[in-house]
Image 1 (cartoon, rainbow, N blue to C red):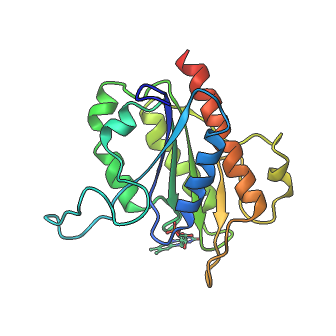
Image 2 (cartoon, helix red, strand yellow):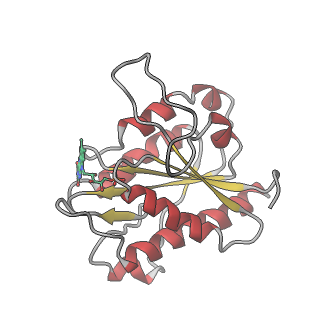
Length: 201
Ligand SMILES: Cc1cc2nc3c(=O)[nH]c(=O)nc-3n(C[C@H](O)[C@H](O)[C@H](O)COP(=O)(O)O)c2cc1C
C-alpha cells in the first residue's frame, strides 16, 4: 500500500472501548478488499474548558483524525456510543468543524455509514444510527447500510441492524462483541470498501 492507496476512513469516538472494538472489526472487513485500505482514526473528548487542548497523538489507541483524513477518504464508516439516543458530542464537535468540506462538496458522492454501541438493547441503536446519517446526507454522501442477505441480520439476538452495525454492550459489566456483531461489522467494512472503489471509478 502506498500514500496514494484509497482508504475507508473508520472514524469513531469511544470512551470505554466498545465502539473502538467495532472500528477494529470494520477495519478487518475493509482489509478483505484488494486495492483499498482502512484508516482508523478517533476524535478527542470535548472539554467544557474551551482553552483546553490535548497532545495531537493520544496515549493509546488510534490517532486523532485530521480534517484532511476525512477530506481525502474514498469512503467513511462513522462510529459513536449512543448518548441519549444520539451520537456523542466529541464526534458531533468534529463534524461541526467540517463546514468548509461541505461548502466545497469534498465528500459528495462518497459512500458512508454509521455504527454504534449501546448500553441497553432498546435504548437507541436505531435512532443513533439514523440520526448519524443526517450530517452524512448534508455532505452529499451515499448511504450504506447492511442488506438482509447477511444472514447474521436475521439470526442475531444481540446487535446488528439494516441501518448499520451495532453492539449491545449491556449496562453492567460490558459484554464483548458477539459473533454476529463481529460478522456484521466485517461485512459492513467490506461492503463500504467495495462501494468506495466502484464509486471512485
Ligand atoms: C451520558 C451517557 C448517555 C448514554 N445514553 C445511552 C442511551 O441513550 N442508550 C443506551 O442504550 N446507552 C446509553 N449510554 C451507554 C453507552 O452508549 C454504552 O455504554 C456504550 O457501549 C459505550 O461505548 P464505548 O465503550 O465505545 O464508550 C449512555 C452513556 C453515557 C455516558
